[in-house]
Image (tube, rainbow, N blue to C red; front, side, top):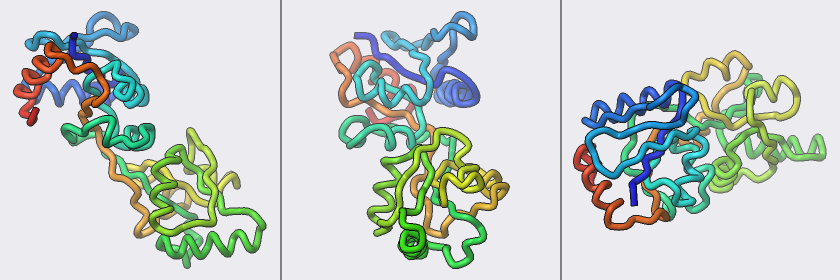
Length: 232
């Protein structure tokens, strides 16, 4: 079986992925036009390049349709239940860094920690008759994080874009979202809780535990690992 390597299909994440592999002695490249999702891996036999969106790669890893994949660690941990038993994180790649954080309105001067948020959530429910709303697209990660922190009186509302604007638009009271610089949070008059870091994400090379690792795929993986300097 040919070893299938899934990488992001467009934008800076694709370019950075190509650069990372090149810096480790492996040339991967797009073939055909920009509209064709085809590519090649030079110099290593039995490896096919599969171009996918970063969001599709966790699904394909779990389904076993690709053996290796490059995507954000936040996407893997959010989209794959029991992720450590289904994929292995082989190598952080040093780009695509962003923090998943809890942020609240800057005018909440008495709310700086998760304990403060828990107290504010209880007070909010008592005053308004419904739970404080936290807008996010990271439901699994946020729910687990808040459960471990003991925050209970809240509800998650789904936001797939412009999450920072939900507080201003009165569709949420707080948010949990990815940020790299914090500029958008500040522009929307939000502040990060001092202990509100949920996950520090970056692009990572993952290995599927559910793919068919026959002898040919294993041999190609060993050759690729040696070139990349990984412990296979």
